[in-house]
Image (cartoon, rainbow over all chains, first blue to last red; front, side):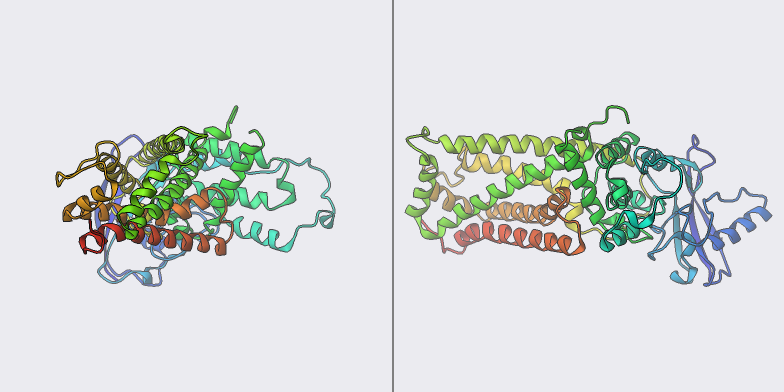
Length: 247
Length: 227
């Protein structure tokens, strides 16, 4: 495959960036998207140019480190992470535009790398349960209905990649928060901090400069883990309940 | 966050949008019912209009209930517009560097039109009140103190009907997304089935409102509703 790549280049957080065009030939359709960028970087290295900086870690679709805006879609045209996207999803001769996640809460560090520590700070506000350490309690002493456990498991698959924010026309992180709120809210261990969790997490979300949700649904379409939109309903319901409880 | 208040969050603003929106929906459906009285003729329509002003008498003064409803609607408008402006500005600040290429995968056209569509409806509202309530403009120069005749004189003019129907399409698009969005904001759509139901209800309400309101001006143009 021969490709024309239009890629955002930005030397550092404070410098201005711009789109640069690269031609890449003999790309195998079996390559992953990141392997394709690796090949491009090897060529840039050979020419003595600065390679393109992008995030990646596990390359198995489970860590949430990689994430690129590919032709206007977060993680590209398939429902998966960028590392699990393959070049067979593109056609020979295609022009591919590659940009970093665009969100003022995710500032660009370099080229295609953004700083997603805003997500960490949201999690620090309530994405946990407080339990004393010690010997693990007997697992069957706290029964969890199967449906609740399944819902909690399904939304706990969120890898925090930020595709929801990148895809959202409002730059909202509601799907990310909703996943965590639902995950912990479905389980008995999540109940004691349920009200303060939602209020603190949403307040931090707003403080970081993410936008408000307008229920468009672009987030769930972009989510590589297919987190459903009903977690945002759960998020809203939990916040409404917290208001009722005087938070 | 120290001192975080649930009522100060973006979700609280969304709740404001949802609740004020539901108030508007109730008004719009009642208004549509009243409009359809035009098909019952001059006297039925004008009696309905007059009766609106007499509800609750003598317990309430003349136009008493009407003014209570109007104050409620104005309050809902203030809340709806205030929340929308704050959220719109937040969204604009959340992404100051735009994408070179951006696809709206997973989004309906109606969901992307909420803000500009809402502004369109607001501008129409101003014109509509000048036309029928505050200013009572009769572009044909006829009487303005007779609601039925004012209605017929107005919609006999094709471009006034066109403006009206364009506004009703904007309202329909707004409700198509707005109704389901309000249900989601209120936390009523916790499963895929409930979400689908809310979207269906939103579409049906949008259809009823757009068609229901458009019938009267089209009826005038077609000569079904005449003086």
